[in-house]
Image (cartoon, rainbow, N blue to C red):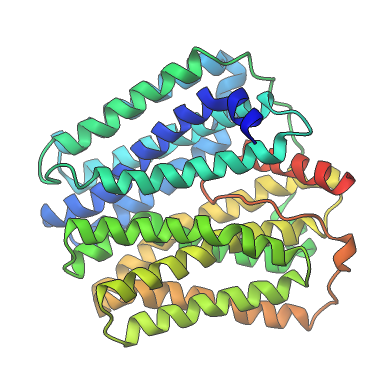
Length: 413
């Protein structure tokens, strides 16, 4: 692992600073929006806009890179991100914020595609799995660290918007000064949604539901905290607990998934998330217990995403996995776009409890659908399934295709 880190540390350092910047703006806008008097539904549109931009950016970035090259795309999108982060504070209007969120979502998707292609190019067949694991850990640590930085200044001021802008600008130095030319993007055949659903109904439905959960956690957790009357310190601790749970529980759940019917594990894990949300919805919780609920929700959502991808791959030939990945990531993106709009509407009707109610319903639907799918066809033998590899919902198709290669390498040993 140390050798892998030494080979790719400039890229990982750059990605760490990028994730800190993205983590700051995601939570900060939720807090600042409440201070500006934006309604819950207005903030839900602002948060949804990021995922809309990310959805289109992840589809269009490869074509941009083919036309003008990795370095130009990376530098141009990075400069735009840095500018947008400052514009939030300069123009505190929810409509302007929505437009800026579409733009910054598009730019972050392009930056991630470029960085992940370089990262994948630095890895060998023997180190690809460890490299991806380090990449996921760096992503989580970046977002968790961002929550601590948010307590360094007043969210009503300008400084907290300048800090991520500077971090994003600095992030490109270690990456651009150390990378080798990335490989060209090969055109991948597309798989229709109908074909994908016929192969794995649970995978498609589950990925869509988890897109809604991820958008709620990444986009609306800070909005919920403001409505619930939490302080800035409490909101940032709540968001950090979500991602800490995802980091801690990813690997134990993955280890179990390689040893049993993945549908059963999906059912159990989703049910645990639903129960935790029911408790948070109905019972008055102290802040310490609230952090525990956040850890549980984060601890089930990230592993569930990886579980659903691994389960879908169990029914695919290796040559079809890359084609399927594009469809699955698009389905996840659709869920992420719709998620904040629905949760904003629910919270505007029932209040802060709508946050946990929404996530709990999605987890319950996934658990119930898993039970129904187990009655429709037998599970593949455990010996015939691929190995689990941790993936975060914010990764692009480039990272996911690298995961496929890492799984193939692991399964061939």
